[in-house]
Length: 188
Image (cartoon, rainbow, N blue to C red; front, side, top):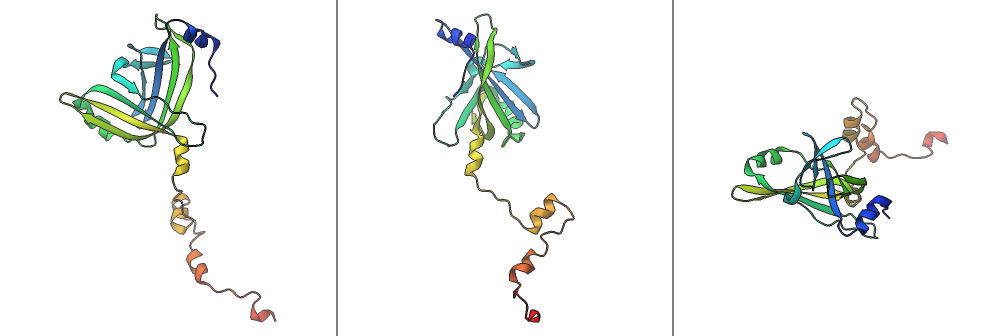
């Protein structure tokens, strides 16, 4: 169960409540920070680029069952020249977080934003238009890792990759076919 502060609860109980989402994407090229406000907002000692109405975030699905959930975010109106930059970035498995906060009409953040979703980037998708396009990402919760098979093998090759020069598993293949008699004939 999520809890919110009393000041945020008071804001939501009022006649007009504005909500802003903060999205942090950690890519290889660096950390990107965006917010759904109409202007850049300073929060958590960072500047969050305001993307306003050109950003869309699908509703977060919460379930009582133990299952992976996902989130789809997109940014529209992106110049087509930035497509090559987006395609060159390795995004799969990179951390992503989203906080939600209340914001006053003056642009001040009310209390501490609540971490609403945390996961890893799954896929990047691009919808191409004439002069602009839409770039989006699918983010999945860490619960999705439990649905993937573990492909780790206990053999000489994987052990050698982790511990170069260690020959611990080098005789396993020969031992599989070996016939061992216990106790040995020489014992009697």
